[in-house]
Image (tube, rainbow, N blue to C red; front, side, top):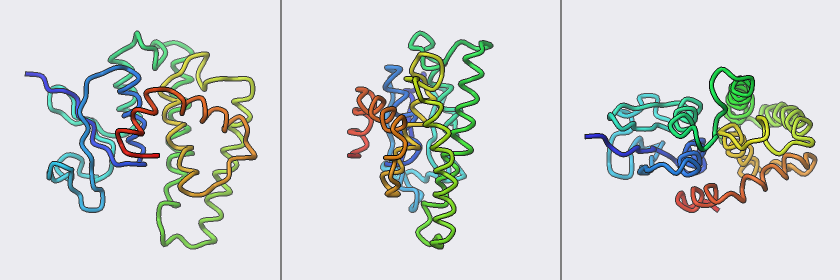
Length: 205
């Protein structure tokens, strides 16, 4: 018997991206909150048995297997409901643009924020990390000039992933006021019902 999808998440983490995508795709799923530090899920499972690397997200598929890594999970969700349009059709130019942006977000934005989550990070290194991110923000802002979304004319999983990662600027108290196109982009995505529902479900502001 097939199981319902289960998303293992932690509030404010990148797992918010697949959570939003699941709601955008109108898919049935369960949520399981993870205490990363304790390595336990809300139901008492040892999270290390689910994802030995210990971080979120992880998605339990209908056959009981586990899929990890945000980009892989986002692509899986998009491809389950191609009619929703969260990813362009395979082997098209826009599909490769989607891969481009997912890769950029993962390596340059998501990974770029990584050091800032370490409270023991020396101030000098913190400043260097933020300055490097700001160069990426300038690139994104320029790209968004005259554009609504990152890939073609449609809202995709790249927009979801970008929204989640850029939202971390709030936690890090990084001022986005120099980048008006990014601010507009975040407002557009944040107004979507799936985003509001996911944030509410994770009890985030």
